[in-house]
Image (cartoon, rainbow, N blue to C red; front, top):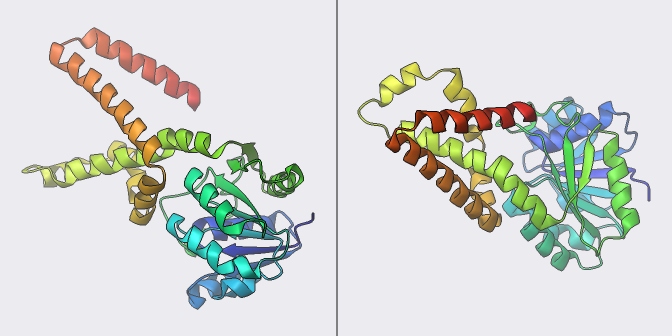
Length: 285
């Protein structure tokens, strides 16, 4: 199967960056963008993220070999239900959501044999959103997770994997539930921690203003992801509940152990613990 026509439903940071990156990589096919706001579509065309745009997703998918759902998580399944009658036979559908198990399970029920659904998650992004935040190089050398089930033929998975390679990404095949456990620890939990830290300062009395005055790069860098869309935060908690709760439980145990050592006045144990953490983190980056 050759992918000539691509429909990107949701031309924001990820959808827009995908279109820009495909064009920069030399993709010669047509890219149709779908958005509820015609002004945003005009911006996407100006930024060369799409060739043409429409507010009608059903019209956009008629001739599409690949449909990329770059909508909020809670809009993915309703959108699938809407476009299903208009899909090209054998079309590949993927998404870019940061949770996979619930989406893949529901998507396969909705689509049946009408099309091939392969869950996707590019491990790249920003706390900013919208077409104006879209840029080339967003995906350079990033891991792009694909979560096909056994229902998807190997050749279809390979078609999508090969297509993504032109973006200079590193495709990785994972089971949906394994993906969700991983991102709970490295993406969702950091977001919840950042939000909790910001909320701690936000509700600090009577020294809130003084904290804000003194807050510098450490606080800014640690809490950067707290500026992500609240809608995203809500969606990950709903669709990745089990893995996130397990992560919170583990985090609470680590904080409790740290609290214990501080209360007991064990500076040597604390320093050793911090040293192990630093060594591991330094090895990551």
